[in-house]
Image (tube, rainbow, N blue to C red; front, side, top):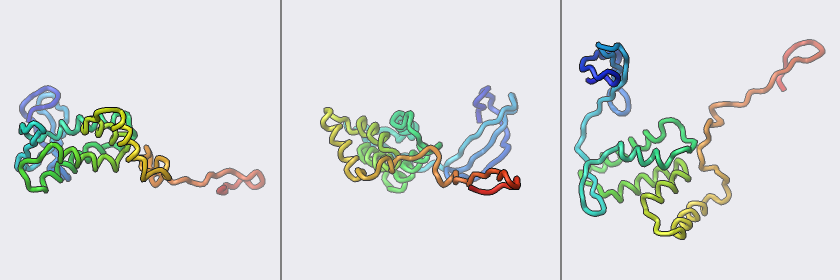
Length: 184
């Protein structure tokens, strides 16, 4: 394993753990002594993507991650949600049992998943993926997105800090008469 800092070829494994993606290994470079993490996954059948012009290429999760990062730029998404979405899409594609999958099917799968995470990111991704011809098509997509959510104002959007994580505690203050604390 090549060190990510100094490119030295030798390292030792300091810690090894099972993770949902495979095996997570913490390594230490024998030259610079810095530590880095690697992930090992079982290589499954190579997925091939059939493009619109019938070209075929290997499925590249990094390419999907880059497009999702662009669509989700400056959105209040929880840490790791994009990586989880990419992993979920890749797992769904592997479970389909097919070796070739149309890029259109992959795009629709991503659109379905991103729609439940963030509506603004959904519109951004859909505008590039579906290649809207004009502003009217874009407007129709936004109106279709708003129809079932008219009564909810931003209820589908993710908060930066979920309310369950930070419960409201009662404030305490001292009574002037006896100096004891009491909840308000």
